[in-house]
Length: 151
Image (tube, rainbow, N blue to C red; front, side, top):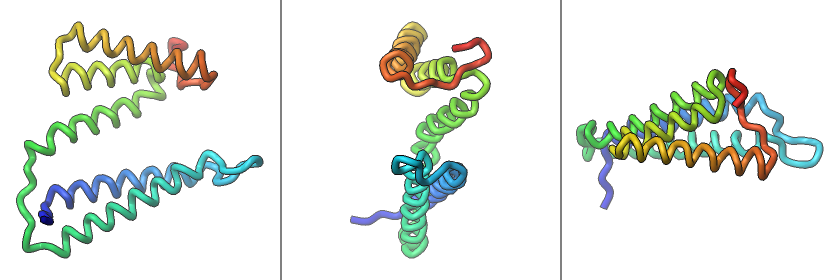
């Protein structure tokens, strides 16, 4: 049973745009390093994969025009809001640092998207942020982007 819709078309365009962005950003990173694959290898191939699969989805939707239905905006609104939250958190990384931007993203996802209480949202945001910080900074020694306040 194959049902194609404008939702698939819109999703294909969004994923394709994201893939182009990932590919563009990865093209500035070295593909190979002195010891093997460089930091640009995985994102470059992921970007190409996103673009390729999005092209298949868009082409498949356009080729089956007879079965297109209207975009169900109510079904698209929640995932779109979550994606917008992720994009905003990524944009805040350079200004606020990882700790605050990840805490705000967690707070948004729990409070707004999951409609939990403010106390639950704060607890989850603080716990997740602390866990990420402990795992990456203290255990693995991976530096996370710092904000203007040094954390």
